[in-house]
Image (tube, rainbow, N blue to C red; front, side, top):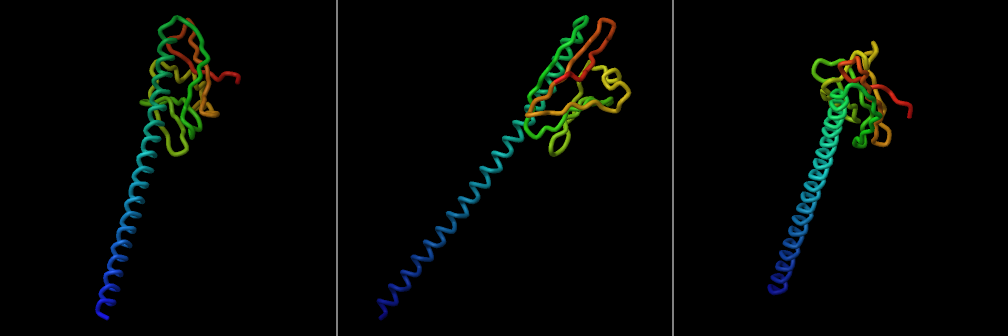
Length: 154
């Protein structure tokens, strides 16, 4: 009987070790999945921030090119990340272009932009982002010192 009891005890110990090993493996898998999910969401967030920064640099570059010329007008189009609602121009002291996202606002300063003429007495001028794309016009007349943003017919 002792042998049977001894085998029974060893068998139960083996099952306990297997159960602990399985539980530990499941915990490790959950931890790795959570870490992978976290890393992917951070990467996507970082990628979106890069796209917003690229938009501001491209807009600044387009405005500066037109500002350096004597006169001209361009219809411009920019790609933005999904979840971007609208782009607004305001008369701000530090930032004059605001990007409205699903969660929050990102703002940038665009140099050589005539906010007063762009806004025409309004507090802001907004452009809707459709399918990750926004379009508007840039204009500068020969007698103007800065560039104006205007709505274009879609």
